[in-house]
Image (cartoon, rainbow, N blue to C red; front, side, top):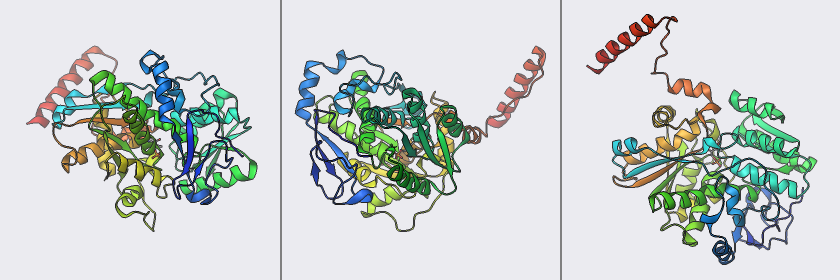
Length: 433
Ligand SMILES: *Cc1c(COP(=O)(O)O)cnc(C)c1O
């Protein structure tokens, strides 16, 4: 369906990431560049930062209600005159892991736990903006293709807004995510193929049937929702620690999350909210690392393949690699890749410090540890690790991650409890010898 981007007085242009052609917000009703087409011609929002600065002077951030990302309304298309939906999206907590920081010789290590979002992943930032935008354009149906969380999140927001929602997921999506979509009442098409097949099919279906397309890579509005993650990191760390961390670590699939984070961080630096621009480390799963490859070689690898326990970043053909690569370059960042074993270990490690992560969310911690090993992140530096989704999203992986922890069967009798604890202490002592 044709979509206008005129809602925000702060938007200065939409720019094609491929050819640089600029559109005035009222100029185009196409979601993608008319010259480069729907595959390469992904558009990107640009803002009049002076106008935003004036608005923030009139109503400073610290005077605005906390609790959701709508406080950054200047940067959220369609947020101007619409009452946002009721859910408290964003404003997720920072969780300091001081013991972990000293174990790895870091000055500080903080998690930002995106699992606390309404549908338990970072994707709510994008879906909330997408659905508000869809409502503003009288969309009748919203649709997306997803490895799981984007769909779950869209399904939830559509339920809230009373909009029909159609989802395309690969057959392999974890059951808890599928259960969530079904309970929210979405129509779920389980595509017999890969995420890429699901993605293509959804694109065609949106064109064919005129549905609102929530796919982040194509619909530039969605990345603006994701950018609030970066805005928040900058504001929250500045308020709490008096400075922005040296590094922000983010897991990478399609590349929209990291692109949004980089955007948000750099806007806050331009607007003088943060004292500096942090470096951004993008973490991919070993074997599915096309964006890392593109960062190093300038284009995607020619034979996409791969598999990982981290379904949310299992994206062999990423659509938004250019935004991701550009963003990380601007933040003077890096990419690395981690194995499934590293990811499973990181789930357990994050858990022991109070953060329950699904595999793709724990990949960022795994990537941090790898970067410390490789001396990319150095002793004494401060790091923020984005945990993008809750561990409840994939309980099978969580059980694998906890494989070394034992479940102790006990009869309902206090003496048996005493005995079990005694045995446990003895076996711990044996193991520690
Ligand atoms: C989607 C997702 C990512 C990666 O985001 P991209 O925009 O695909 O790079 C990471 N972690 C989780 C939990 C996700 O759902």
